[in-house]
Image 1 (spheres, rainbow, N blue to C red):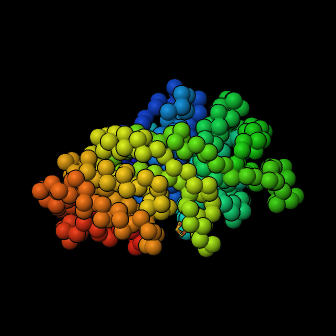
Image 2: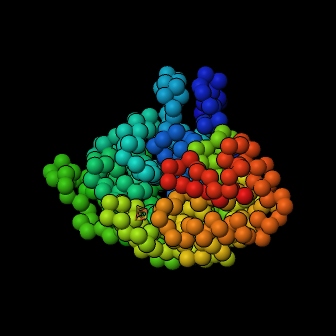
Image 3: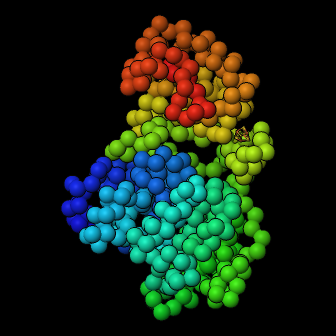
Length: 399
Ligand code: SF4
């Protein structure tokens, strides 16, 4: 398969999107694991590689013994054309395996505009687009992400949805598939017994919604295996896993930086805001852990920017200490600290900016030079310690 893929790469734009083998990617031999999961992002590589959820799930699953998680992204139109012409199915980046050969295919539904890409990827993988058409020869197709808060629009195409936080649920799903001896049973195109057994196990997992059993789909498409599903919540975010290393793409990702999740949820509760509602309650990670992770991630990736990520980072209880401390410590390495999402009226923002100017690093004679060096590719922003980032409502403290 890899050879066939390599032969079409010279004819497409940005072949690095389809090569795999990046620094910190994880490759487990398929014959040495009992469950294989393809993490599918329904957008191009540069967008998918910026998704924090995908990075967390990739790390969490690959830390599990006997479980292998690989990545696959939507090919750009030129690559898709070449793949269809050469009869190359959708493949994973790590082992170049056809996605259809995996036990589970997990889509990240981050925005509704990606729904049609999900269907196209299923088709490109030769997996029946309709869940009701799948048999034991097909993988189980699951989905998670913001959009699964309302899973019904995709219920005809997805076998099971993870509603809420995914890092604990995906491990339980992987173990359920393993305990169902799915790999031994699957492969029969004239049966759906094995997948029904697996779906029954998945329906019993907290936060997993299985739209309907195969036998009742035609009779009543609205019938669900589990009628009431409560969103999964990771209660103790501090204890929740976070990747110590991130994959370093060969080509520039949309967000080419380390994203450090400092907090989940938002204290503001704006009535129009989906994220503010579905990520309740507010949970924070400890400052000490974040500082340690920040160093580890910078060391492991070589990134020159670290982003303190959350819905509204200025609401993090110890934002002044964390951001000021990190900005000071990272200065010598020419690593910038940024806040990608801030509510403009956040009261802590003004003192935060002031504290950055007054911090010990600001007193250092060369900190502005350091900022300029780290930001040389964004020269216009480098001279301003508070700069607008690429998100409309974002600001960064550029050191
Ligand atoms: S501050 Fe932003 S993230 Fe928080 S609830 Fe309001 S709009 Fe949503």
